Image (tube, rainbow, N blue to C red; front, top):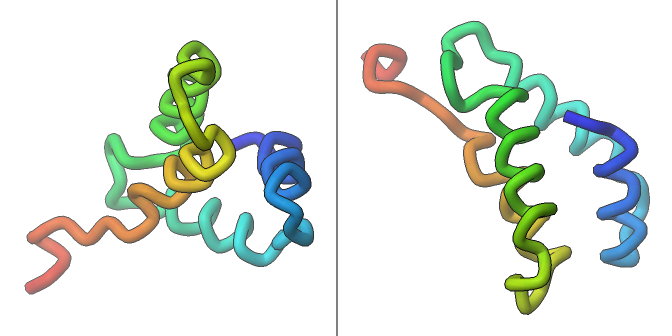
Amino acid sequence: MDYKKWLLLMQNLGLTENQNTYNLLLQAYSEKHRHYHNKCHIDAVLKHLENSISLAGNPYEVELALWFHDAVYKPFFLLK
């Protein structure tokens, strides 16, 4: 999860750096129980966006959604 990409996104959206939010996302995607929905997964989906950015009507909003799309991940075995 590239912090420089995060900063560029925040700039493109007209937002502050939101470093605390980035840190919370990084923490969430680093949870030990994550085997797929982790930092590598976010990097992969952001790479897919780069390859198809011309198809997005609102590319910055789509990118923001991708950063957050698996932020909350509680598998069944953790709900017990």
